[in-house]
Every structure is written in structure tokens, then in C-alpha cells.
Amino acid sequence: MPRQRHNITRRGLIRATAATGALAATVSVLSGCGSSSSDDSTNPVVVDESQETSILDKYKEADSPLTLKSTWSIALGNVLHPAEGTWIPCTTAGSSASPMVKGSALSLASGTVGEVVSAPITSDSNVEIYDVRCSDSVYAWVELDLLTHSWWLYAQPFSDGALSGKATTLWKADSDYDPPKFCVTGSSVIWLVMPSSSGKKTSESSYCYLWNSGDSKAKAVVESPGRFATEPSVSNGMVTLVPRVGSSSSVYYGITAYKLSDELGTQVDQLVLPQSVKPMNATRIGDKFAFSIESTYSSGGVLGTMGTYIGTPDGPFLALSREPFATVSGKDGLYIIKSTSSYFVVDSSAQTYAVLAATNRCVDYGEYPGTQGQSDSFVTFATVKSQETGYPSAVSVRLFTL
Image (tube, rainbow, N blue to C red):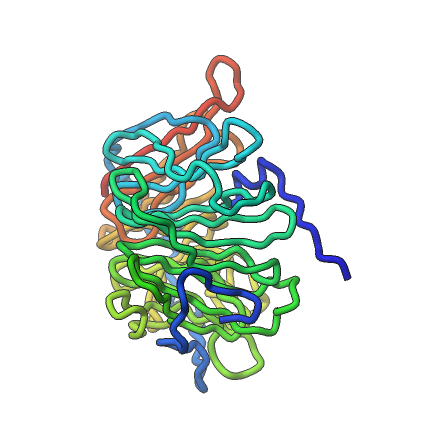
């Protein structure tokens, strides 16, 4: 059977934000996992309405506690990705057909975007930069072959908006494995290697890997007997993953927090969702999980209903019954939840909520956060229309303090 071809357009590429056949390249991999998601007992959290506090029904509307610190206008075609530090990674539209996309970074000190990776390392005309992430000390990016769907994950030291030293190839794989969901925190890169749902390796486990800058070996840290449900999220020294859990034939996902300081060797907390309920995203803010369910299931109680939920395995839960669009941000009982065309800013201590409107003249596909999890600041970005022509003209970035 011929290999399936994947047709990816320039526009689609810009907007797209432990296994046989998937090979680590420059970095060798330590065998074994620090944590396994497959245990003998699965205790799903099924809650009823008595354990749910509806934000829109129970809380009062108030003024937003966020303070707008800065607003910048950057070039059309920049897409921001969540980060923890003073640099926000961006995929930037190239000025010509090749390369279609470049890796960049936005400085939250100056509001300027600097080019970081100008062209793919992989020497093939069909390869383009697909996704980027960074901290203030490491920049990582994925390169994708648009014809074969093979991909490569690279990382390189990063400081003051520029790369230094040499790039390290962390992983490479063919189309039997999806391009990795990944994040960067401090000097570490964390990524997921998962079999494609339409490839030849669908029965294989998925693995989470961790690599520290300067190391010759990456470490397999968490195994999932099946695909992880969400991307990894780093927040306040915790890494939140959502592997499959339990040893039964039924499907359960466990929203799980691990300590970053011991390379995910210690599980801090876990919330097992009802059978077959799959979260859209999940993170850790303070001692609570914040996660979203994008579909309504036929069973599962409250947590089987579309919305965003904040709570612990023992409950109770704050709930916002709106279609989710992005990972929650916040700190100290303050939560920022994206809705269709605005954000809800929820103060659980004061039992109030505020509506933060999207940027003026924001185009149809909306405004999105460049921050997730626990943070002292909140970054948003949106493509906006020109007041004179009505056509998309720039990307507006806003920086708020909490």
C-alpha cells in the first residue's frame, strides 16, 4: 500500500499550532520510566450537582482585577505559543514560499519580535518549521516534512532572544507517530511521542520524555498505554499530563501532576475522569486542577458535561458551562478562562467574575492566550482588521498583570 500523503497548506501550517520506528537521534534515551500510568486500581471521580458551583449562577459580576500593562502591534502572520518567562515563542510567516514559517520570539520587555530559527535544519525542500516553544534559556522546535509527514524535534541554548551553541536533535519519527506535543521550562524540554491514530503503530504505548540542556541522554519519564489526552503543561514546578490509566479494557484518563524537580518521578496528585471522558486541556494552579471538557457525554455526571472545571479529586468544583478554547491561567484563586469572544476572570475568594473583552476589531477566529497555568501575568494575542480597509493588518498583543 502506498504511503499516505498529507496535504498541508501554507495557511494551515501557520495556524496549526520508546517506540519502534521512532528514533532518538543525537540524544540517546535512558530505558525505563520514572512513572507508569497503568495501575491495577482506577477510581474515577464522578460528581453530581451538589458538588458543583456554577460560576455564572452563583457568582456576582464585578470589575476585572487585571491591569493592562502593555499593548503592542506586531506583524501579521505571527502566532504566539504559551511560555513561562520573558520571551514568548512565535511561529512567523515567511516572506516567501520557502521557508513558509520561521521560529521567532516576542520580548515582553520591549514588545518586539526577533527571528530565532530562520530556516529548517533538515536538508530537504519539503521540510518546514511546524511548531516552536521556549523558556528564557532553551528554544525548541519541530520540523515537518509536508509530503511524508516525518518530523524532527530540535533544541538549542537560547538567551536574550538569540540562539547559542549547537542544536541538538532530540527525536525523529515517521508518519506512524504524530508530531510531538511539547513544552519548555527552565533548561528542560518535555515532549510526548504518540502513535498516530491512523498509522501502523496504533496499538503501541505512548511515552513522555524529558531532556535537560547539556545532557547526552533524554529520559523516558511517563508511559501511557495508549495516547495521552492533552499536551504537557508546566505550572509552578509541576508538570501536568493526562495519560490513560488503569489496567482494564475500559478507557480512563487520569489528570496527573508530577514534580518537575525530580524529573517527574513523584506523582503529586491525580484526578481520574469518568469512563471515556477525555479532557481538551489540563493544568495545575495552586493545589487545584483546571481542565476543560469539550463534549457532553451520555454518562459521567457533571464532569461528563462540556465546560471548564477547577477543583481537586475530592471536590468541590467550580464550573463554567461554556465551550472551552484554551488552557486556564491564574494564581491565588484567580482564574482566567477563555470563552468564544472574551475571557471570564473568576475570583474564587470574592466569589465574583468579570468579563474581559477581546481586542477591538479582532477577526473571526478570535483572541488567544500566550500564557497557561500559574502565572503573575497574562498575555493575549489576536489578528486584527485595519480600520481603513477592513482586512487583517496586524497582530495585537496585550500584557496584563494579575
